[in-house]
Image 1: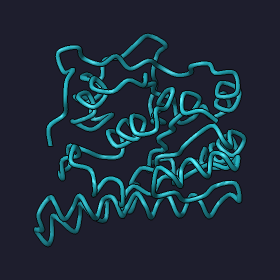
Image 2: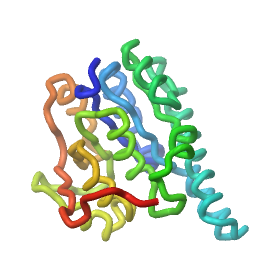
Image 3: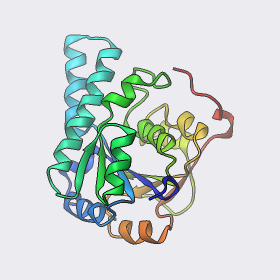
Image 4: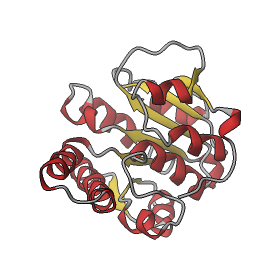
Length: 217
């Protein structure tokens, strides 16, 4: 499995409590060796936000706790399918893909060691999925989101303004090389076929040209 054949699938935490979770897990399991799952923070990240508002700890601490929240959600997902394996490093991701399984990324080790990831709430699992796509040389990035999206391309800036993606996402996307798409959370059926055939699915996300360039922490 070459890196150019990898698809990054960011599975938002909101899918955790939805009726579509089981179908997404089945669709992802059929893509073993071809996809890497980036988990959102889901209910675990909500606890971090609430605790920060009550306790008042700094964003740097909240950032680390939010990464741990992603890791928790990822471990919960991995427990739901024998074909899922938690992977916390680039080498672990590659080994899992070579074995024909689905890596569920645990971001703590890689993200905390990175110098180009700001430790604040502007960066969430959306931007981290773009970042991982760059690390792995992935072919494309799919963001699984709730909502109605047309087939027409949508601006990354508009998505950030609407709160669909985090505030840093447009900058990361513009600085990266993998095309990104929004995939509706209620439509998991096309994933396995599209990945197998190398087709794009979902709504294309257009980066802002003015945002292109190096991302500063």
